[in-house]
Length: 89
Image 1 (tube, rainbow, N blue to C red):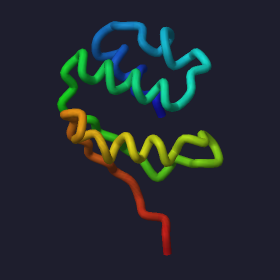
Image 2 (cartoon, rainbow, N blue to C red; image 1 turned 120 degrees about the vertical axis):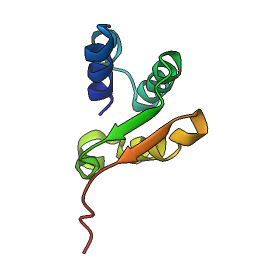
Image 3 (cartoon, helix red, strand yellow; image 1 turned 180 degrees about the horizontal axis):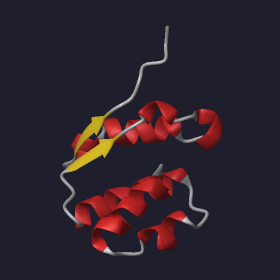
Image 4 (cartoon, helix red, strand yellow; image 1 turned 90 degrees about the vertical axis):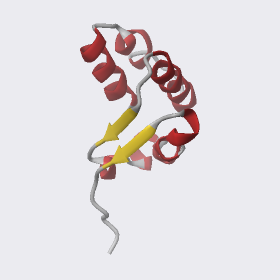
């Protein structure tokens, strides 16, 4: 998920954050802090997350941390909009 964030910023701003950060072996905590810093630096006011149901602890080990980051976005002056399906029965 962080790599998609960096890729979207790169596409919008013609920057190289994905190559600089996401393609290296940083911990999820480091990547979340970098996302926070970049969001602040570029004054990103709204973060839209689509297909959030695909976050998986088994795949990333950091799904809970990512969800907490999105839920706590308002603490950092960020609004977030999350789209996904509730898969619980």
